[in-house]
Image 1 (cartoon, rainbow, N blue to C red):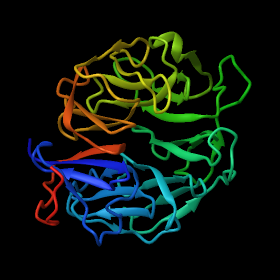
Image 2: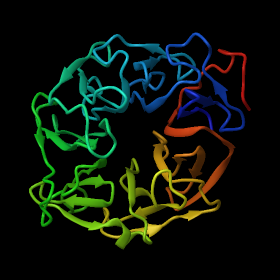
Image 3: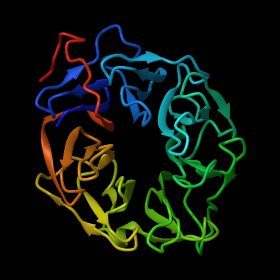
Image 4: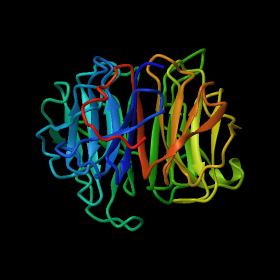
Length: 347
């Protein structure tokens, strides 16, 4: 399969493969991202697959050659740990980035394709009760409604904007159980546009519950994950396939966890079926990555460095041969990054 696989890690920076995972290459010694640094998120520019954004421990970084080299973009997030990144599917020139521990949690926006950035409200507290310093784990731009964007904070709640992030409303209400998001420890946000007679479905994942709303966030239904997913509570992230055929969910028995599964839904999260894993993962699944042109191809990474792939839209999964350090993000771009950019290979 022609293209570049990218794996973001905590401890090995970014690794890339241009031969479908047979060999892997680390970043060089003079990159903006340290070759043994931390990269929390990756995003391929849909308007130009040569451009890959990375949220690193030094700020917002950009590659213009498919991940072979990275330069830091000067921004108010310089020197901050960037945990989440999102590109507006309706207008790819609009982008969002979220920071967090060990730096201050904050939201940033670009309106010019990442060239310049502005810090956005709200002012998130420096400390929280659950993880000491909050971190923005999820940013989701509504794929059908211009200006609608959400972000979720561990721990700091779910936030919503209808004006491209100029103003925000906090959605969760701690302590209210009926028809509300009751837990401020937010791990994921996913929006499924209307389809096949079904209304828009907004899903907010807290640490222990999948909350869903079909009335544009006016009310929520959530059932504890341990009651739905074989006794596992640690609800990590969700990933819709590009063609809308299925929704994938990563869940485990804790962090880093000793037991983890991937579940698949074809009815927008109403019911779930456990996927087939041909190898037991070594820790909780942490992140998904999708193929821009092939919804059947999906990547998944675990907390302790296992990389899995599915070639059938998430129904079954095979572990790749190489183990990594902590996998934080995975991505694929159809652009083939130069493999001779750096002489060292860890294959």
